[in-house]
Length: 543
Image 1 (cartoon, helix red, strand yellow):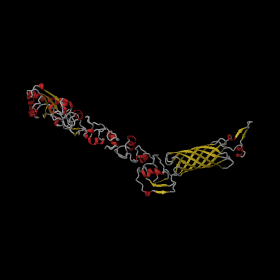
Image 2 (cartoon, rainbow, N blue to C red):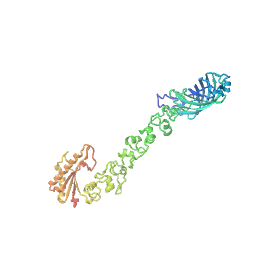
Image 3 (tube, rainbow, N blue to C red):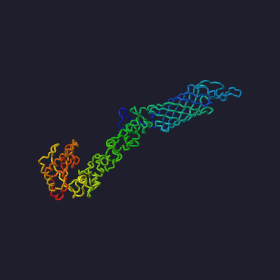
């Protein structure tokens, strides 16, 4: 059988050796490297009952040669150091009770009654057929022939010929060492006796351990020392894996499965560098260990599993119409919540403009439940009030949609029922509610409207902006005090107090986004809504 000599660096020095130059690989057609072995053992020889000898202990020494993947040949020497004569097998008592010897027994022992203890020596040649020689557990069948001789003249021939057949089981510990169990049935002797032997032993293969230790090794048979499905030769020459470790990179997959089944790198625990070990991808998450983004959503499988807790096999984990990658990287929405801002619209519908108003698609903000700051959520406007979530005053009547729906109970689609609205840009000192004189003109303009419409009533609202340091209770109280300051001013102008009410909303109803550090001046305001002053309202202007 042909063998191959190759240069192999020691594994302890370089666990991932460089590719081998083909010029360093030399065919050795006549090499028997790793094929010869020595096998000592001990056993028990069970002889048929009418044999001249009793059962006996024996020792054996075999020299074997692995010819091919299926066939091996052995030569054996068996030595039984002490074998007792079996008188029971050849004697009986006659009718008178006299013990008599069998005539054949007498002829074979030349008429002597006893020949005493003796020894036995056997020489055999056997052929062995292996079912799975390169697996760790190796069952086999055996047949052969041999010669037997004894220290005493047990048979009339000096040497007895026999044939035998049986089977056994080997357990390959590594390239060099193997345990074995054998049983045989021998057909031997002048009376064609069937004798049985059972023995146990071990095997040592000459030079096989050089596969891992010697810089130049010869591989004559495809041994798989670690049982990973790759021969040691392939692991050393082709894949540069450890032939004594079934999972070289420790990723949870055997080297053989990585190479033959999953096509992953057996020297890299994360072949696609997505943050998950190949074994985790194959066995736990069912992702592709050769594709860092199995579902093609723009996120690495590892990031989905470890960071975002999304499904690496589903590009849209929450089913909102946006890929997980789009949500995380572009829109900053939650890929596990189909409605990130809880406004009643899916994130995908908001981004893609799934709804329309007056024939125009509505692309709303999936992170802001009230895109136009009119106090109505985008979902409410689209699905219920049918207002425009991108226009705070859909009917252009002067009052925000939310003010009409929530407080005034007017129709946000009909401008004719909107109350008269004034927004006062009064600047108060920090934490103060005193109105400075420079803002009296704005207030006088509003007071004039109410004086000219004696049947009118007004609601005065105080609003604040919001910063990171803002406190809700404090802002509610402060905004109410400022609204009350405006109400007192109007009373001072002769307007009956019963026609006026004041309320503070703090930062609950912004009209524009707030900066977390500076807030927004536009949200620091006082609003006045006058009911009963509709006639001639076109003549009124914002102060």
